[in-house]
Image 1 (cartoon, one colour):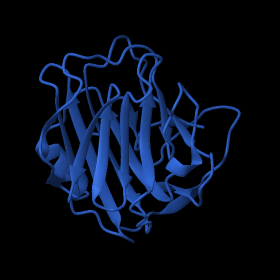
Image 2 (image 1 turned 45 degrees about the horizontal axis):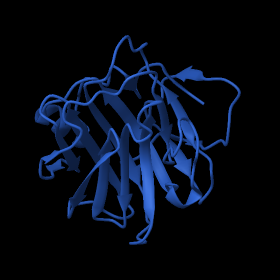
Image 3 (image 1 turned 90 degrees about the vertical axis):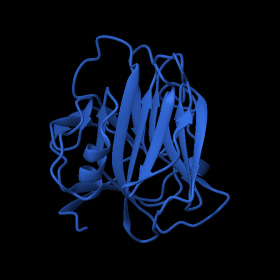
Image 4 (image 1 turned 45 degrees about the vertical axis):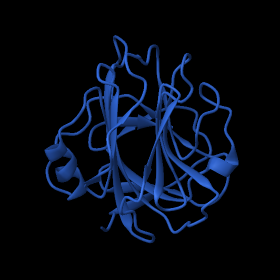
Length: 215
């Protein structure tokens, strides 16, 4: 999959820039404390009781002892509110409300674009992860929980404090693009469409194809 352009990663900006990011990717070139901060497309008027996140990443790192963080959502009550990361190449982490689910053996590829989608529902507590359209086993995390308050969303690093506390050893090295977030559990057909680059309805909280604000 060829991206039209690359937005090379900047350490910090003074303000958020609303922009359509369709066809663009952020490049994370090394182990640093640099990151991208995304702002939700809409103002959240209540707690998050279910959520889905999809994104694509490209990396050639195969250090089995090193964690790489793609997507980190934190609230004041839950630092790991919604976290997506991987260790090595076949061990992917999904954390919701500081509760961990690990997914092994899904078909991630080195030196290739990989699609990742994760869903979570508070009522059932069910979490599931898809890599390149293949689903992992359903797992139970954070049943009955809510993500309350204003979220901070970071790409490329894991928040160990609300909006900070970064550890460069968790830094992602590679490219990230097509980040979407919904306040619902999206259907498997929507995940398949995303994974296969077919038409799909973008996220209502974060939409890479809409006027997403980043800094």
